[in-house]
Length: 156
Image 1 (cartoon, rainbow, N blue to C red):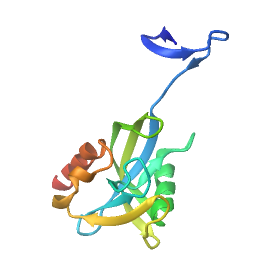
Image 2: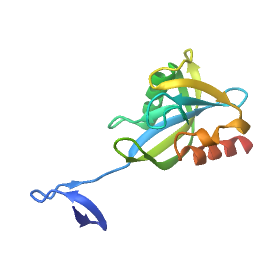
Image 3: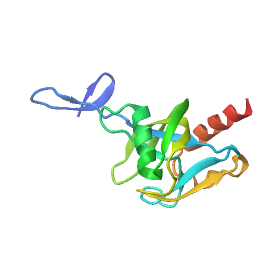
């Protein structure tokens, strides 16, 4: 490991290849119903098994965020969505067997086709009133500021 650009990086001593360790991108959606309740999914996998999460997940290499969130929602909920506003982009850590920094992109979305049911790594889905969001049982730290930003949009 050597310093390059004021950061310690893995650099090959033979060819000077620099291994840049980047944050892993995710794309997720806050889906609201007509009562402006928000849909959260209970994780059925580690890390944070049993905690509430926004539906979504990691982007594939080269995948655009909008395409990725649509794919993830189809895999997790079995529905098609229409993307609305970008809520924001939030940094966090995915603490698993291999801890990695994440760059979490969250959109507003509406269901446009299909019958919603938990699939893939989702154990349960539930609509929460804005005043009953399970703050202490959210899976990841990035969700709290993202939900607060989403709530501001509905209070404007």
